[in-house]
Length: 233
Length: 229
Image (cartoon, rainbow over the protein chains, first blue to last red):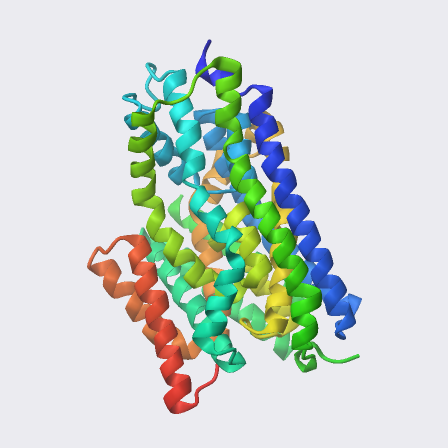
């Protein structure tokens, strides 16, 4: 039987469904717990609704990109396997395909080659999922990450804020610069997105329209993406 | 009604009423997701009798880990401070940290006007990350089911725009937001991002150098010059 047909069987959809349901329940439970607690601490329903709206608007672009990326994986392997891998969106299509190639090499086959068999697919299924285990293990031990942070900072809220602020500027400096260096359209996209988001967040304060902040990242990323693509042709 | 920045949550209540249930459910469900990742291999063996031999598993595992292991270190160091406990349970299991979970947490914090790394920041981050998960998983399922329709509906030009330029745009936009909040860390962060890149140090180690270096610089600025975030 063709491995691509096997890769689209019901049990692959089901496996993706199991992880998705677990992820969805956890997200729903966390959201409910946070909201209930926040409302007892003085946050209003209007305030928390604005936070949800902001996150939802921001999610639109990246989620659409994930769906499009998944198409590439679905074409290369199968829609069911793309769902199993991307539903609890582990990696970019490049990472996923690189891991599939690694697994095929280990099985003595070549991914994407007509000679790729069910044995190669079995290796790909296991190895691509194994690669995600590390993060799951880290998630299981999250409570210790928190304790480690408390120990390192002594619970000092000012230092905790410094560490969080510095780490975020650092990681997005890295991602932005590494992407900007790929080509001129990439550079323009990164710089424009950064400039536009800074402007929109500031504008929201200047014109006293806090709701603009909910849209700032979404607008900045879409405008910069289209201008980058128009420049690239 | 208090402005959000004036709200200080009770630390004891935070531990008892928020953190405790989060850890209980987070630990159980992260463990369940860990085991669920075995399911496709188990089913493949049950229905088709195919399972990779040990040599393939060890070889494939070693190749996979050369790529993944450095990120096992760099991502919690970078993301945990802003995402907090609930955000990290979700990001560790559901993925998409840099391109989706952190931007959603960040925008929720910006809307709320709370500082990342604080208890209030953690609560708001939870809302941002959980909302993004509740949107992304159903959207991916819909995408997988309607894959042919999507390919017809969206022209190649648009798919190419998303595939190539959405990620740099997300990174740039979130970078801009964090520059506004932590501009004092920008020069050191840019230097520590660029130099290892120019020296062709692998990405995950480059991230560790950049993030840890900037954190230490931030600590020194607070400790010796009383410069707060």
